[in-house]
Length: 275
Image (cartoon, rainbow, N blue to C red):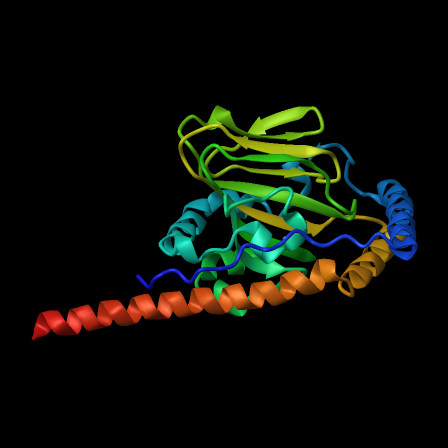
């Protein structure tokens, strides 16, 4: 296996204390609140913390074929040291992810497929392609003993699904709280939730937790979809989108290089053994 390339720890984003910055943040917060109220009224599914799987006909196949996805995740984890921490992909997440304790192997980001990563996970990619209006998808890898602090998502227009893959044996100690409801992950099981509710995660075990996480558009009426589309376009113009996009491209290249080097090393060893 290739030697891990050291990745500098990202610095906490510098704050700008100008009146203009405060005004923009205040305006943005009010805009998000207004859009959230519209999306809540326009939603075609319940706006509860957890949402019934039965409302999404594309979910059953993930539970039926989860072993195939797990196999691909295990293959990726052979290069665990090359998988970036969430804070390395998105510096804005510095409060939630520290010291590479929460790693992300991204397959889709902001609606765009990462071709090099998904080439390594063809089954997962093919199943994800079936999801209407898929936004993001990644293998979420949580270190033993790590706690992700309470936080909220940015838009009511997105729902989040988790598929349990590699789950600690003492699964009840590896759990997520969404609003006031707490659920553990179980291997091969999917649940859907609204991440605009406050949520946090605990892995109070000595084992790593790996899930497939994916976001998709909330089913909504016309004006809800319109607001969501407008918001996503605006977000793509900001550093919130642009910085992770650049970091993902770099991380994807590094991972591809590590896989190729490992393959070359195995080939060289095989040739040497024949001599």
